[in-house]
Amino acid sequence: MEIKTPMYVSAQNKPLRDLLRCHILINDRNSLLFFCLILLYSRTLCDARCYFRPASKYGCLSNRNLYVFGAVWKTEDCYQCRCKITAMICCSLVSIPKNYDRVNCVGLFHKKSCSIRVVKKTNPDISCKVYNGVG
Image (cartoon, rainbow, N blue to C red):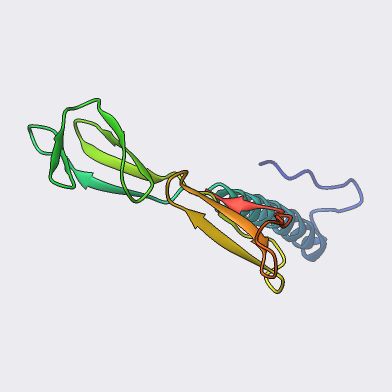
């Protein structure tokens, strides 16, 4: 990046010129830091919980079952797995509620639908408002 020195800053006024150069670099670093924080925050909001296992030359082994390359399946513990030539990739199907009234509400896990429903502790028939989740 080229730094343009204002007309009133002469070559003899080196401290002022260096100060301007430093100010521009700090602004660039602050912008970079701000961008990285946004990237990090957005990553946590949509972070899928995944794990990888190496594939064999015959396919992918999961729960004593051998799956061919290209196969996609759902496990008993709510993960969707894909068998690729390089690895078996499994990611959670469950969205975890993060921002809700934890004093009056509780999350109930439903294994059949692979979901968590947030309800009132005193009356599980009443749903609670969830503001965001991960997964």
